[in-house]
Amino acid sequence: MSGAKTPHYWKSLPVLNGPPADRAPPAAGDRNLSQPPGLSRRRFLEAAGFSLSLTAMVGCSRTPVEIALPLVDQPEGVVPGRALHYATTCGGCSAGCGL
Image 1 (cartoon, rainbow, N blue to C red):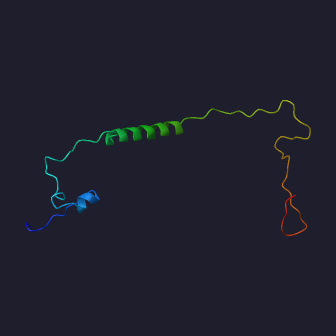
Image 2: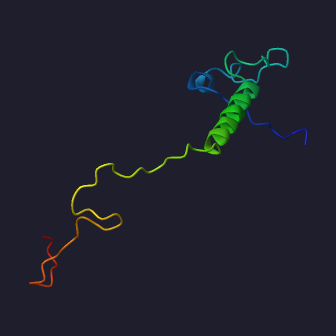
């Protein structure tokens, strides 16, 4: 196993096309293991959990009760529960043209 060659990975084309010394993996002391500036994974998961719980709370809240009130002065010819307009079709042909 000591003769097995480990693969060398590259991050950009200049590193790939550079001299062999540039393609060597960095030493253990040269690696920067600190977090990049900006949003960390922990902060992202906190924000995602908060937004999910807020959405669940808003979705489960009760809506206000709406009451249907009758007309004060009922127009002539209007009967509650009876349609005012009807969908009619022409019976002259089999196409069923609307009138």
